[in-house]
Length: 199
Image 1 (cartoon, helix red, strand yellow):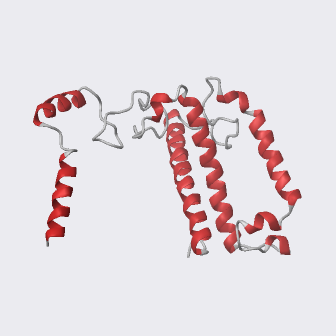
Image 2 (image 1 turned 60 degrees about the vertical axis):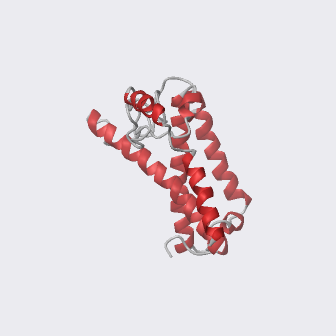
């Protein structure tokens, strides 16, 4: 019983360290009211650079990375590229686990083992074309061009209104973020539990 009391007192003391003193409550409240609140984290002020002009910007930056990032266009390029690769990767992971093409090289249900099964030639082709696309768009990362714009548009892009284009950009960045979570989850599930993504 004395041990439980000791633990309770220790926790109570620790919690007290995080409670603001009454003299600071009014100052803190006034300071926070002077800033616009983050849409994603309403208990935090909106980061200064995240003003909502970029698609998918909901003011989510709890670590303050945007404050040290000089160029948010470069950061958005990186986010879009990683997101697009992740969307392709999760499709590849699920396809590899459930669909098997003829031939021993393409029949491996292990998504990571399949990379070795197809051989060096196939992997080099993939890396070559990734490199070509990357080099063709390398300079765009540092100019004022639209982040993620590599000139690949669907047949109906020009006929869409500005509002429809903005909606599609918003949807893309949301799918990119979901794709990044999905590939991390799918890869972790396979490597740790050796279970297919869809069960």
